[in-house]
Image (tube, rainbow, N blue to C red; front, side, top):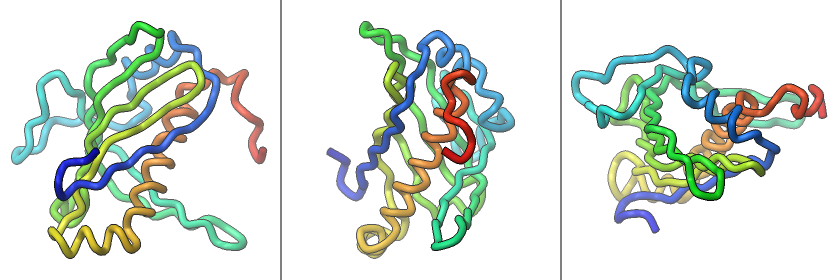
Amino acid sequence: MAAEGHETLAVSVRVALNPEDAWRALASPDWLGAASDPAPDYTPEPRFRRFLSDLAFPVTGSARTLVFRKAALVDLGPIQRLPDGSAALEITWRSATFAPLFPVFSGRLLVRTDGLFLEGAYAPPFGELGRLVDRAVLHQVAVRTARWFVSQVAARLTPADLKPPIGS
């Protein structure tokens, strides 16, 4: 359950993963974007790694998909190997510009042999008004953005011989 004023978010992508390949890809996630220093007004825990990345919100129309992108700072915590062979890491993201206008997400990415699972919470901006707008419309933006992000991570962690052909 999310803290007061926060909305929960949980998405997953089912795909076969090799844990060792996934750990290697997450240990050196240069594919996520350029490594970045913390902003002067925000200091993540020292154990976190920060990347300047793009997050996207795809909108599918009848004939094509329109994608809105926003520069974001993505912080990854250390990889924790779990007893069942899966891995977990803390993850946060926030807008790289105009940060007070966008929600901040904080959660956990779970990497298992059967897929990726992202769960966490975000705080909509603008207090109660923001929460009302989020419930009416913007929660779907958050879900689609998170689903897009997890699918991008899954594409990086999936061995080439297990990836579906383009267009399938």
